[in-house]
Length: 501
Image (tube, rainbow, N blue to C red; front, side):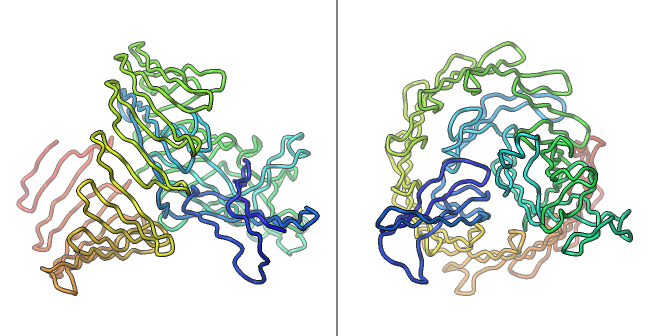
């Protein structure tokens, strides 16, 4: 009769139909699953076939969505408040993203609080009702995925790959499982290509559950999951710059962020507190959304929501109100931002598939976007009619860019998404173009930069990826020093002239 393809996050949520077919298919394509319309996460892909009697047969498959190729996604941020303090400033930033328009959080549907909301998810299905009753979490397996959104919106993914506990390396457990694995393991995670952060959890000793790829605790056989209170309930994400984020493994909410000097911000449902003593506080409505924010001077920022759960107005500390309107056909898609003077600062238009197709500015002039999904191509036409073409690789990197004058910029990347070569082809360069080349260390710091003539600039780095030296193609060196708090203290050039900061 017909069949449907549906998708839903593994962590829970409603299934959304992405394709419906009414013809017989034999060893051919049933429909297309488009990861560019989904944020990076693990999803259940469900195929349901109905016969003429309306009897249904269903199969499901878990798929992982990765990469930054999100053609037509719309995202923007507003910083409502910044409180300068020693170390990390207290900052309240709201970010809207069409990829999360179906998820409600601190500021309603589609909006998230930077830092606080990491949107932490795993590739595991929710625990069974029986396990939930006794307080168990779903057991981690070899290859379980963990996804975390960093400040700025970048989503990083890690794979669970436990390591053999060296204490038990030469000892066997009391009874090996049927797979013949006698070892005791320690939890460990490996970042995807391009991820320079590290993810750790509380130290634990775990082993394979007999006959499965699941892990359990060495003592008591509790299913291993960092979200379980028996295993700490905390993830620790450390960036290459030494910034440490402690994340609640159950809720995905950020608990603390600490810089290299020990300055700390603590986050809670009630507000954000600095280790200096300064804080901002939140008042929440009955749905748990932030209704107002009070700064250290007791001045308020107010937020209002409509019956659909959308953020519709923001009133700042000077009592200026910005209004927001949403698409009537596509629920929770941001359409308009209207400033306190009643001017529409930006108006969005979306295609039938939800991709952004037009942004209209305050003067009514549009920027238009068209997409060729098969070619991973986007064309952007500005207000003057100039067309720029972008072609992406599967990871979302721009590999070819063609401007309105026909100038072509081509880029090559390594597995970590760092630019290895950048070639500009124009009338001046000829068909071969001018090429610059780059090399990097394992943290993504640039080590060398070569110009089209082969002249090379060299860079070295110290702790937390701080630039130490820079040597230009003529051998002129510049050295940098830093204070104990990580601030740039001095610059010394090749003539030993020193600038103190």
